[in-house]
Each structure stands twice: as structure tokens, then as C-alpha cells.
Image (tube, rainbow, N blue to C red; front, side, top):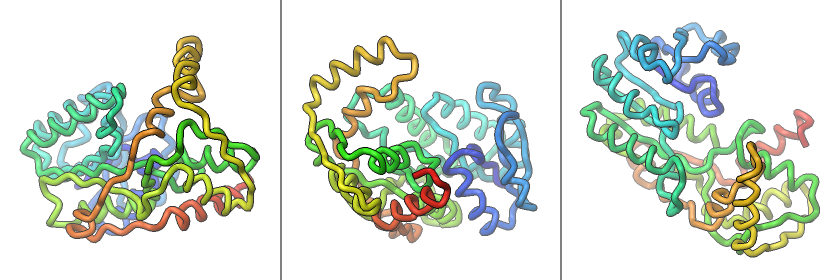
Length: 293
């Protein structure tokens, strides 16, 4: 039996359909009482169990009879060690963990140490693990980054870029990542290994903006702003705002490279990924059909 966490989240809703189609096993989904589970009812081999990582006993109970864990839920909230210990306690033989390339940031990010500690615990657990570290995930209006950028560029003739905009990024489409999860789970070559998973293209932020603008048939003028005064202003803004729209850390992240090689994933489990232009074109088309832009 497979246990999946994060099944109702952005990535989970793209992964479960592929997993349900590829696996003959029962797929047990660990969900909160408040989760939207409607789409899961479409699959005959899905079983639901309710609980929360805040009550780790509920998760341990969900692992009863489970051979494989596919942990899509974020490791950035500090639950990693508890998840791993529960797996050890219940004799889970195989586990796929979704991490992130953000753990390699040079910034003093709040979740960096938490994620690094989670991976360290996984690797020392003795469990047959595979760690998948995607770059920025995009693909539908539900993503947290590209959809906001698309909406802004659709309505704004001028776009502020904090810094040069020449630092590289390599977003991965959510469908390609979902495929990778299933392939890594089914492969015999991924045991005790960690993989960085990125999109096909290494693009500067300027190129990302230009690609989206061209697909929207919009003429958008980029205005480059110096980073230092922006950071001073945002640091002050964050002190007085409970839910800041933009944070200083986000600006700093735009000014470091976020491109990662994925050849080892291609070799070990035939990882495939689409170009950014193709992926964001599909996202834009979907947003237009839904009247979002």
C-alpha cells in the first residue's frame, strides 16, 4: 500500500491521477478534515485517512500496513524528523520525499536550515529513500508565482525589475514534476539518491518577462530599480504589515541564480521536461479560458 501526503495541494492534485493510473496498489491519502477531497472520489483505488502532522500519532496510524510513502507535503514546516521517525516505527520500506532546490539558496532563509535538517534525517534513517528537489513549480492559475506574474503583465504597460534581471532561473511545469514523481517511484535506479529537477530552459528573469509578454501580445517596458533602497523600504514595510505583498527575501532570491542541472534524473528514470515557452503558453491559454486574464 502507498500513503500519499499533500494529495489535495497544487502538486498533489496533478500527481494522484498519474499515480492512480500507473499503480495497481491501494493509494491511501493522508488529508486534513478541512481538505477539499472532491476530486479524490473519482478514483476507485483511493482510500482516505484524516489527520495532521501537528498530531503525529494520526500520521503514524495512517502508516499502518503501508510499504511506501510519497511525501508531497512540504518539509519546510519542521515536521520532517517526525515523519521519518514515524516511518521507521512502522517499518515503511520505501519513501519518496519532495524537497526543493530553494534549500541551496545563499540567503539566510528561514526554512533553509529546517529543510537541510529534514534531508539529513532522511538520509540517516535507513529507509530506502529518494529525494526530489524541484525548482520553482508553475503550470496553472493555482501556482504561486507565474500566475501572478502573468496577471500583472497582462494589465501593466510598465514592469519593475529589482536589479539587473540577468540572474538565471529554470521553472519546472507541474505536470512534468508529477510525471517525475511516478517515474522515480517505479524505478529501481533511484534508491538512496537525491535529484534536482528543473525545466528544460535556463532563463534570465528578463527573458521570462519577455516570453510571457510576447505570448500575451503585450508591449511591456521593464524598469530596472536598484536593489539596496528597495530592500530598505521592504524591511520597513514588513515590520508594519502582517501580510506583506512583497518581501525583501523575494527580491534577494531574484538576484541569485536558481538554475540546476538534471542529467542524473534523465539517466536514472528518463526524466522529461518541456520548454518554458510551451509550459507558460498552456498556462496562459487556461487562464484565458477561465476568464482570469
